[in-house]
Image (cartoon, rainbow, N blue to C red):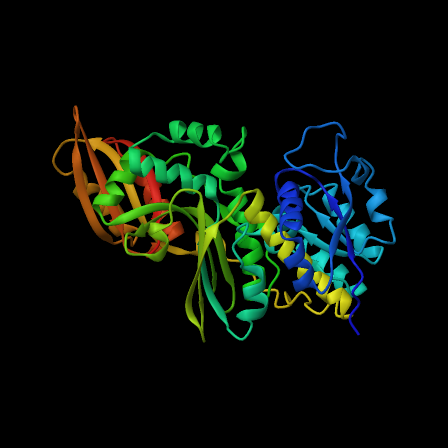
Length: 430
């Protein structure tokens, strides 16, 4: 029989996401209680500074600087971890499970690095660990992969998983801004952190695609082996040339199940203008996946922000509250039991865009094409985009070629006396 007593939660962290969770719980309390089978009440919130001004009004009696007041409280049913980072979040989550509590987290780095072990610990104690908010904020992805699409074999996931970089690339494309100018604007608007490294170097997206790949392909993913490359070298010229050739540049996170191994990576890519992800702009996220039964499915929405992410956390809290009331915790175990190896980027075959400055003289293009041919890299298109003094700007698009062969050819091309600079190289994803 279901229990109708209030479910008590303890929240670890009251930053941007924590504040959003509190707001959603307060503003939608009646509807949440109806959906969860009874009230969900915040009993305690862990903060660093009791006196700090906050975007939500919180009774001072709820605040504490001692995590044990949450972890050791027998009345708290669910620990909601919203600190971020690996430690002390990892320690708190494991201790919560050991003390018999359920866990909801929005921590992408924690789940990317230690999710398999955490879920195994949860299974041992027959407890829930839900983490919908860890990937793409308010966009439902984890539950659809685990439940709604469970009857499919997922072959491919492609996504724009970082709103900061998507905003920057959108502004560069729309207004011709340099990367540094668009980044500064993103920081002023609150889309980018003061230190934007995790976003602009692709680390944030790498954590997210590692989580999605592990669930979709049912195998642990070593996030340290996920290839990631950022957008700091993208220039307005690359964006303009890509547009003329029929492409849009996006920071793309991709994962593919190749049967005997998986391919998981994050890097800028030229995407055809008619591709579903090409029209995803500003700070929005989108994920396109392919299942053998359902075909292509796309998820789109706000991938970050206090309220969208808070919405995802509260959705998990409602699910866990239902499980507690009906004695059904621990019913969604980790299914990452296939242990498929990961393909190294050097083993892959990709198409590539290449922009270079060369001496404006006869025979240069033929010489470079000869090196590409010797390396078994065939050419899809080559265009001269104008001259800069005695230099000509040349743009190439290649057919698919082994990464190792293409990079070897690049090394040889860069050493040619007629090549002034290889300005950029970007993969093409059709």
